[in-house]
Amino acid sequence: MCGIVGIIGRKAVAGHLVDALKRLEYRGYDSAGVATLEKGTLTRRRAEGKLRALEAKLEREPLSGQIGIGHTRWATHGRPTERNAHPHATEKVAVVHNGIIENFRELREKLGKNGAKFGSETDTEVVAHLVTDEMKKGKSPIDAVAATLKQLRGAFALAFIFAGEEDLMIGARKGSPLAVGYGSGEMYLGSDAIALAPFTDLIAYLEDGDWAIVTHAGVEIRDVNGHKVERPIIKSSASSQMVDKGNHKHFMAKEIHEQPEVVGHTLAHYIDMTTERVQLPIDLPFDWKNIKRLSISACGTAFYAGLVAKYWFERFSHLPVEIDIASEFRYREAPLFAGDLAIFISQSGETADTLASLRYAKENKQHVLSVVNVPMSTIARESDVVAPTLAGPEIGVASTKAFTCQLAVLCCLAVAAGRSRGVLSDQDEQNLVRALIETPRHMAAALSLEPQIEALARTLTNCHDVLYLGRGTSYPVALEGALKLKEISYIHAEGYAAGELKHGPIALIDETMPVVVIAPYDKSPRREGVFEKTVSNMQEVAARGGRIILITDPKGAREATVESTLVLTLPDMATTVTPLVYAIPVQLLAYHTAVALNTDVDQPRNLAKSVTVE
Ligand code: F6R
Image 1: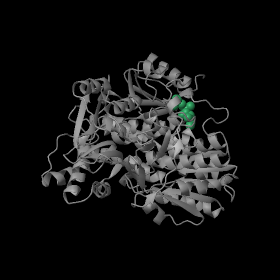
Image 2: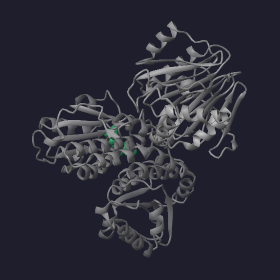
Image 3: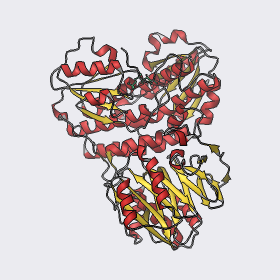
Image 4: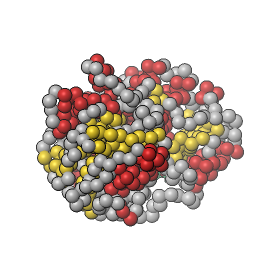
């Protein structure tokens, strides 16, 4: 993930910017840079590779400006070269950016026609040109940024400084995090409190859509509509540790909210944003064309990620997929044929059952690919090849961001398999990749339903059982929703394929049993009529007095007019990416139910983050 810092200081800031960037190194990066104002002129130093390269450059060519922005870049659009490193600048503005500007291609084309000259392949540079264009029309820097933000689509955080403006820095947040730090006579912007810890522990976190006008004297924060807003200033504990909760009450809440950013970051690792193709960052020791069968095993939430992947692999690559809970896989004596592929999914990389299955697969001459979040874990070390999820440390025991990052990686792998096996055309691949690129923005929209979900959660606190239903890839999301609820709120919950309702669970339905139905309107031609079948299941629930919570999209909300239904409406999106986005409301529902019940959300009873016994 890219890291952002900004300082309006009283002495030269370049050294401090680099110190702050060092604290963001844990996020991963491949180039870095700073920009300051030297006698009113925007001046940059950038370097490929680690921060020591930037430090060496600053030693050779020092900067003395007292206002500046800095950045560690994890390459998304364009290779990790000095030319693509941030800050990006024109003669009027310099900008650093974290996240993805989805519509950068159209913007770049439009700006190019108006004569803009681009020095990089990045999406970020269009932001600098848009602001410059607005300023050339006579707008002030603040108005130019306001006009620019309206034109950008995606999930991102930005920080700007301007030529000739020694007392102005602007930060903006939409999807990716950004914090304001309060010093005495100095002010800061940072991706998180950890970056700002050497300077201040007084932090205000921007909310989604906020932008901040920062001067030596303080900050004015405006919301997405341009209205002045106050955000609480909190005392951060980041100085003593490298992971903190930000302004959230629990790690789980922080991790739920990080998803647009970490999923964007993970996708950027697997996708070439410029060509809109999947580009795996790993060398596979096998050819997808030679694989006859794929076995997936994992435990708990990671198993549900695998279950979604089964649908993707089968649909995109026509590979037969077997999926098992890891503790079953190795004992069920499944015949495995040498040279096939086994995928293991694990956040911790230490889960004993998953590891035992991996060893069993190796003994049976499978190619072993693992999708893990902890790079030096045992599962990672014992695999032939590792596809990393870049979720960052997950502290809450209940898995959230690791799940959606696993989905992001598995979807890219399925697309790569589909392309290599000749099932997906170039156009199919591009459509899927475009849908993936839009996911962080849809996730941010899903997070904005939180107040509604919080109110809904309070009505679940006196329930004894909750049923979750879904079809297709929404079925594993239903399973995951039920698991989240039971593990942190201790309310009994079950996930079912909606079609199974009549084969048993319908006996449980009465007016005390809420039924959460996860049902985006499925547009894929081969699944025509599936949504209507789910609506029939809802009718069956309503007829027995059951209370329905429907999570769907605008079309689904219009079509499913079943009585006693409360609807949570998510944006319209490609069916493929719905599991990544629909995971968010079910996580939030479990989280707020648990908070209302006052349970130990981050460390629920009897559970461990890393299950190292079989
Ligand atoms: C549920 C949860 C667990 C884990 C499972 C596997 O919220 O966290 O079900 O998913 O214990 O753990 P990893 O992914 O570390 O192998």
